[in-house]
Image (cartoon, rainbow, N blue to C red; front, side):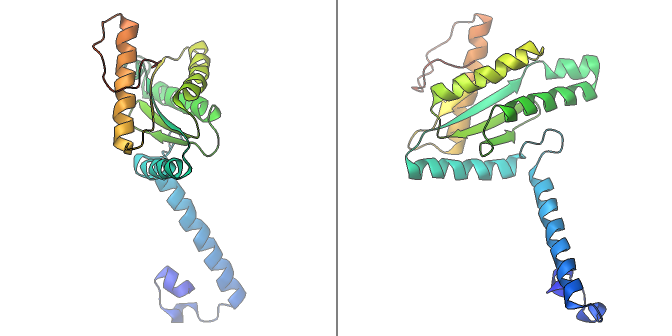
Length: 200
């Protein structure tokens, strides 16, 4: 088994005791798991990369459908990240992203899904929680970030029976855009998506 796992000829392992081979195989398995985890996780923020995150999000959507429980997707956009990068340097921008990710993670449960969605955006998938509850939770995180001098924009969408992950993301993104327009005082046309106001 060890030779096959390493892709080498069995003769190269001659003289290796069964106990040593078992230990080596165990260490190899740990290495493979560690590399898989690193591949799935954004090294800067600790959030899931998009590919692994989407797979986890789709699994949560299917779980919510099977159990008949609510699920809310939240998009969090870090405001003025480009300005921070341009004025204070990319290391300052990196620290800002890590801080936002840490605050989001602290405000979520261990089994909720946090995805590094883009350069300045995160997606949180919160199972078992309706939109209003998710909004309160994310507002608490946002308030803490505000006290720390960090501004974020937020959009939310609650799972509907026929929603795909892309549908949820599109509605949350529209909610985020609407929230920004409301903050700027620009009149909004009716969204027509049935989710109602509530972006932060």
